Picture 1 (tube, one colour):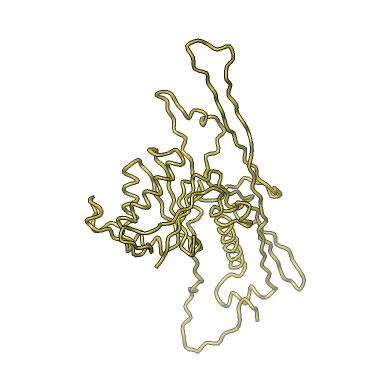
Picture 2 (tube, rainbow, N blue to C red; picture 1 turned 60 degrees about the horizontal axis):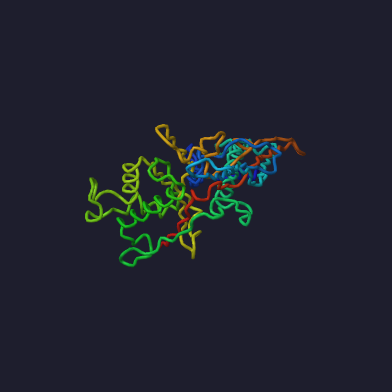
Length: 342
C-alpha cells in the first residue's frame, strides 16, 4: 500500500464523511511590510546579485550683494548597494499506484504534493523576508543595518509586560513610535501606510483585551475602544495615516532579552509635491525614483515545476524559484520594538 495512503479498517454499517480535516497553518502578514504586500517578480532565473543604484547631492551656494569671482558648485554622487539571491528548491516523488491509493482516501495526490511544496516555499520566503539567510550581511528586515531598535519599557505604574500595561498609555506609546518613524523619514504631516507586525498575543492585546479606560481616552468610543482602534483612529484623523496590524508568529521572543519583537514600518516613502512655492525637496522629484523602504525580488510568482519520469513508473517533480531575502533600502523606515510578554 502507498506510504501516502496507508490501508485502514472500518466497521460497517458506518458513514465516512467526505470532507477531510486538513492541517492548518497561520497565514503570515509579514509580507505587508513590502510595498505591494508581495515580492516583486523582476529578477532573472540565473541572477546571483541585485544592485540598487543610489544618488546623493551636495549643493554649495555663495551669498553676497554682488556676484563673486569664484562660485561654489553642486555635486551629484552616484553609488550602489547590493543583495544576494538564493535558489529555493524542493521536490515531490510518487510511484505508479500512489495516486490511486490516495484516491481511496478522497484526495488528489498530485495536487496535495503541489500545495505542500508551495506552502513550504512560502514559509521559506517568509523566513528570508524577516531574517535572511546570512544575517551578518544585513539580510532580512529584522537585521536591517541602522534600523531603530527600542524597548517598550514600563508604563507609569512600573509595569513592564505589555499585557499589564495601561491600555491608554500603550496606545500613546505606539503612536509615539509611529510619529518618531515618520519624523526620521521626514514625513510628519503627510499621510502614510504604517504596518505594525507582531505575534498573535501582542495583536490580541491591541485588538481584543486592551479596552481603554474612560479616563484615558476622552473621545467617542471611550470605554469600548481597544488600544489598536485608538491608534488607528488618532493616526487616521490626524493626517490620514492608514495603520495596519498584521500577524507573524515567528516574531515570538525574537526581541531583546527574549521579548516579543514588533516591527513598525512605512513600506513606501512618500515624496510630497509643492506646486505652490519653493520646494526644498525638489531633488527627490528626479525620476526614476525608488520609493520602497523594504523590498524583495523573485524570478517567478510561484515555484517553477519540472516533472521527470524515473524508474518503476514513478514521477518526480522539482519545485524551484530564486529570491532575494528581505532588503531594507531605507533603514530610517523601520522600527524594531521589543515588548516583554508576561
